[in-house]
Image 1 (cartoon, helix red, strand yellow):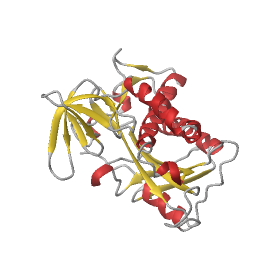
Image 2: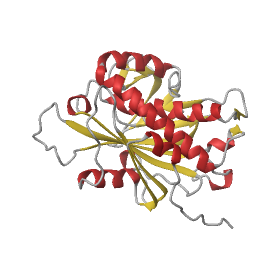
Image 3: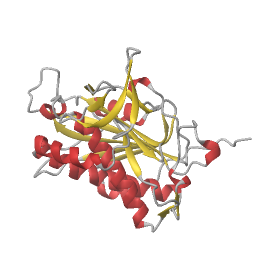
Length: 299
C-alpha cells in the first residue's frame, strides 16, 4: 500500500537570498494560478528593471491540487518528491506579444531549467548512472531523460494592475514560468509509464529539500541573466538560442507525430526550429511544415 505524503512549506534559503520575492506555501491549486492572483491583486509586485537587472519573484508549493500543463493537461506532483515552482519576471509588452520572437520565452525557460539541473548535479558531485544520461528538451515544454518526461513547463502572460489592455507598448507585463520537476520520485510513485524522476538516473544526489532549493536558486539567476540578454537583443538572441537548442532538442532528427487541438495529426521528421521557435516537421513527401502549437510524440 502506498503511503500518502504530507505537504510541508518549502524551505528555500538559497533561493530567498537571490530572488526579489519568495512566496512559499504547503499547498495550493497551482503555483502559476497563485502567482497570477497575487500579481493581479497587487500583493506580489516586481520592481522596474534597472541597468539590465531583472526582478524575479518565486511562488513555491510542496503540493499542487490542480497543477496545469499546456493545452489543458494536468500536472501530477507529490509533496516531498516533486518541485513545483513558478517564476515571475517583468518584461516589455512589445517583446511578450511579438510573435516573431516570443516563442523563445518558452525555450529560454527550458534552457534555464537544464542549466539549473546540470549545475546542481555538478555542485553535489553526483553522476549519471549511464554515460548517455542526458537531460534534453522535448519541444515545446518538457524536460526529458532517456525519452521519458522528467518535468514540464508552462508560461503564462499576466497583466499587472498598473497596466491595462490599452496600455502603451512600452509598458511591462509579467510572464509567469511554471516549472514542475520530478526530483525524488521512486519508480513505484511515477504517475505514468512515460514519466521518470531525476533520482532514477543520477546517483549521489542530496536530499530532496536541498535539490529543490539549489535548482530554484539557479533558475532565478538563469531567468534573470538570459531574459535580460533577450530583452536587450531579441533577434540576435533568437539566433543564438536556435543554435543552442540543436544540442538539447530531443525531437530533432526523430520521426514524430504532432497532435493538434482540433484532433488532426501530422507525422514526419523533426528537422529543427524556425527563427520564431516553431518546430519544422518534414513529411514523407519532402515538404516542410511549421508546427506552432501541438503535442509531439515520438514514433
